Image (cartoon, rainbow, N blue to C red; front, side):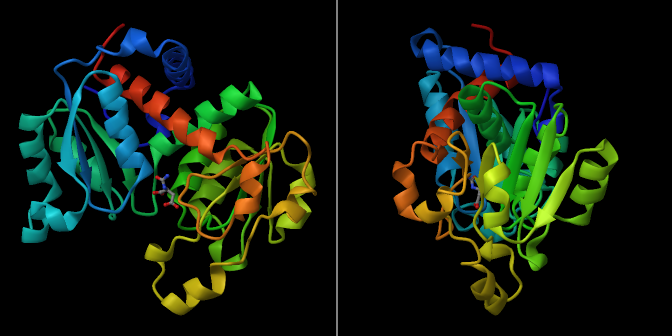
Length: 305
Ligand code: NCD
């Protein structure tokens, strides 16, 4: 039985196969409409979510399966003090697969160790968010036609943004990737990403503060929100929250094919006037998230269509 804790749990070949499957689902959805008849997914969300939880649920429904779960720690027995390990033992009796989001780094991993069903990490604290990465990779590959030979700008909260950490780890496995890391000094990527992921793989990167300096050289700009819930003090958040605002004037500095991605939710970091720009791909990205989660559910449940 397989779980998904990090994008590195899949080899590059497995990932390619999964993305191919997602593209096939996009083209021929009716072929998959009953692939998971009689199966259930449990969504165990101890932290807020809109897209990730609903896209897992939509994905299972599109496959003919059913969903159950909870959307906050308060509405589960966690509020009574139940451990994640005990909860997953229960859930193994009710469902065939589960997606778990938790504010503590490593909680889904702990769950996977005692689970009788595949566990998918749907975001653990400031650590990893592998299914957002699968979504990002499918979006990039579908819209750019490749996953290598790209200069990628990552902008915003690179310290606490788990989607950024997972995406960097996944992308360093392709050739010709360069990163421009755009953040205020306080929100730079954690040391382990800089040393153990980027430097140790010999991946070229630069760290800059001004978005304007980076924009002209990017194939892709990945914007992120400042992760308010991970700050120790509100004043620091307030100081950082509007550090970057991508607007139409800044988009003029970028090339005609530079895609803008964002895992969403957006707060202020992309002005709504950018939404109409053909380079804005963040809403298309949401749709790819459903296809790739369908492909992941089929893969982990070993359902062949
Ligand atoms: C992201 C997350 O939860 O880390 N959201 C998502 O799942 N698409 C990004 C964020 O919350 O900023």
